[in-house]
Image 1 (tube, rainbow, N blue to C red):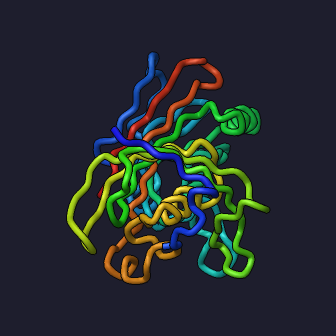
Image 2 (image 1 turned 120 degrees about the vertical axis):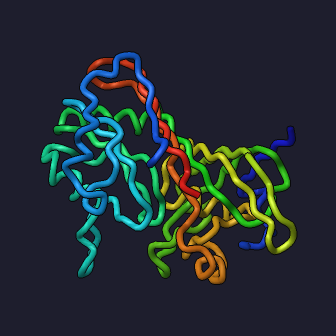
Length: 253
């Protein structure tokens, strides 16, 4: 299998070009499948797991993770979950256009513990994306620092001078099509968690995500109804029971 590593040096000179969800745990106590039945699908995303300390939720594409500024941008995943579980606090975020698994902590102490686990990079995250083109290598790393594009917010840019280190590991799962119709399905494992990290890294590799309105060519967003990026897996140690937990959500594309 071919592999590669993309860094700022190697990038220089390149054009900038739900159903089926599952989880595994040793002691599946306090799972509440009836939680879904009391809410409409429109109001509450699928809740894969809930106990006294945590919730794992499958966010649909197009829904904000947290409220944003501006009229009509208060509806979000956090608000919908807190409408039923008032003590739920979102631990990490997905872009509005990204679907998939999001972890909530119940109460300030659980939020502190799980936030620390993310900071220490002991929470495993995995994504699936479909991108334009065929990567030259079957697997590799993209190690490119990212910074905010102040003139074009919320866009991010590769910036080795003022950017924060960002590292993504990828593996090609499938290749289809040819020439302008070539696409590839990738497995992505972000080691760091920078804003728009996967989206910018894949664009920098020369393979933007299908339907990405910020980083793919305009015709891509016009052709595809949604961005093809899904948070498909999350794994962590339960902060209270100390039981290893792993949740899967198949990509809906």
